[in-house]
Image (cartoon, rainbow, N blue to C red):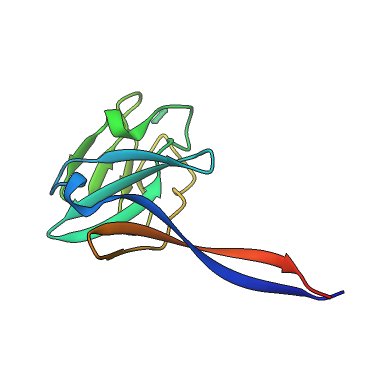
Amino acid sequence: MTTVEEQEYLVLARSQDVREGEPTSVVSDGEVILLTRVHGQLHAVSGICTHAYSELADGELDGTRLYCSLHFACFDVRTGAVLEGPAEHPLRVYPVFEQDGDILLRRERRVQGA
Ligand code: FES
């Protein structure tokens, strides 16, 4: 039996629902994903802070810098990198793109073949 990887695309939101500078949280397959639009560019990172459990949609977005509302760790929404502690681990970055007014997530899926 072989395993092949397929790509699938999930609609996360309508493009119009993610406005410049306003973080928008969505849930896809049980994962909280934070969508942001900065200078027209769409970004998607994990919506949960890596320091402790805190929803980053409650945080503050300053350009590409996202501040957690609980202990004020700062992340770069483009790369997920930690810019200021106390968080030590980066946010997961999700591959997203826009098509026909939708925001889509591209995901790899392993499929068992014969
Ligand atoms: S939970 Fe985000 S900085 Fe502590």
